[in-house]
Length: 295
Image (tube, rainbow, N blue to C red; front, side, top):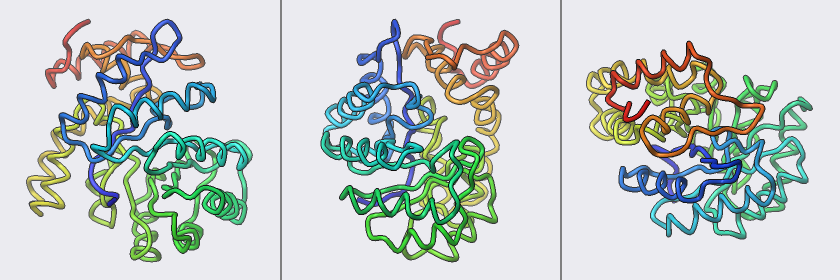
């Protein structure tokens, strides 16, 4: 199982406060038809922080069963408790996930040695390929390249989703650990620049709505090796990439999918619908891309 290409960080559709299983299956079908390389349920974009343990397991299991082995399923199982991370990761493995995706522990802000020990313990306890997830803007802690290089020596730590926003950090990770770990971009708007310094793909928010376009960008750069074509594609997608973060993710992408007619516009507090101004802005962008199917 090779980690590369377009992996979609799936939203979790809700309806009347419950997981909307029909909408989730519809979204998965859209992704498979669009030839994405993998699916990532229960991450940041999947509002994992507001899912109960039972819902978390249900969403991962539903995704695995509906995919039927067509693409890898990478379950988000990170937590700021090592014990809970192990439990969630074991649960994901038990229901058939191919890999786990673990954010750095948030709020308690461990030292670099604490980060190393956290991931090492999970890797020892759960026999499943693990993707590290570095997103300091949400967790309050950056995982340094030398820590990542140490973790890359552990056999079942196979990748990292890098969302620090630093191309220098990505290049340094590649320099220190390129033979042992696969780098995936965690920022849609840095996807192309990150591939130029070592990333092999993206775990994407926008691909919920535009998987074909992101796959074409990936193929232009790494498949066809046509830099000008890739730059032109990236430039054309940049406004909608940026619109997906007009407010906190996953609010804009879920509202986008609502306007595309794919699911209800429902969130779990403390997330809430876009402000009037942001909603008007988003609809304007969607109209330009032909994605506004309903108001």
